[in-house]
Image (cartoon, rainbow, N blue to C red; front, top):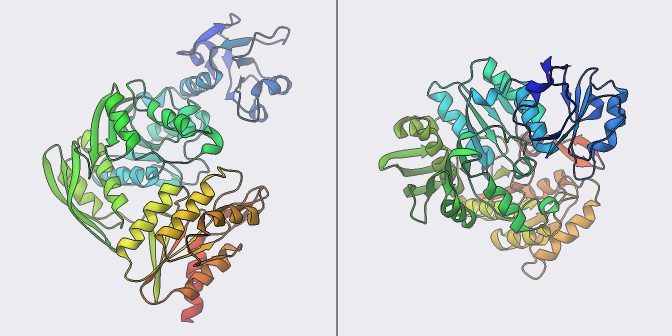
Length: 485
């Protein structure tokens, strides 16, 4: 239970009933979660407006309403008008959980691709070196060394600050969190000033939400300022990264391979087993033996080691740590299947698919076969772009289903196919994802590499609002077992 005045600290209030000493039992931005004596924050969303649910919250015996709409009279309970209900929700949630972000060192990782891998690398480096570290991200949270499932890259404020509170209560020193573009735009974590914010890259994604690349890029850039972070670690080989380097008012540390930067890698050797390179961080040089393949993972490793260095982990200790890192579920996971090998990866954007196929090409001794689809009810314009990329960077493409949601899977495949036609005849359309992977295995010859992209470690396929059990890895192992038995 909290005093209303305590919950509203750092919230910009326009007008309010004078009941700041009132006791509040709980907070909620979902009217279905309102408890008697609780606060309901009426947040406006893309398709739903919390203000439409104020009456329902009152029926559930809410004690106070917070909104950024015009003052409503005769509600029978206090009504507090704030400048921005979304930002207010974040600060109220932080206050409710006693501002745990103030007592943790915090590392935020943002970018179109690579967030999950960088966050896991940082978590591994810090934990390996005796720093108790928590993690929040796409494929799960880690609290007190225990993994928890999650369904959102960056949780909503109530869940996010509740998570930080649990981390703090079990003695965590550092919290590492993936920070999605949606979370930045929706101001989910505004109360937390990161000790380090890491930028991986920015390329086409989420245009179903942001509509234009210009808006998407501006949202990404907005996180890398003094308002949100004390130090920022920025990819100097990314166009948007260069804009951040030139425009940020925070302390900037750049990393890269091609362009001049504060942190860089040289003598890079790539193989199916991983990467070996020399990292130069602040003129300290160490050999890094990274057991995760792909040039993009050299970038990810540089970013992670730099973030760790800013938290006083030496480069030598960081490099030693990365020798022992295990594969990150759904991120360039290699499975050997006798005559060929499979790569499972979450790549679901044009740039992500290009990077994965380029990496596959660099380590494959045979052909590269790509199996992928595009999610329904998302950016339609990326579908032919990804089709074209698969046609250009793989030897054979199988277009299949990937979370069609409320769209027809055949329509999605037609959109992808429009980018393949005219470039190559080496492709098939197979709606059933399991059958598509089986066909890829049948087509594969010795030393070929089959890239299965788009779902990574996801344990389901989303069709018409229902999530059916499905996992690419399970399908591949079933194929291998059938062939060996």
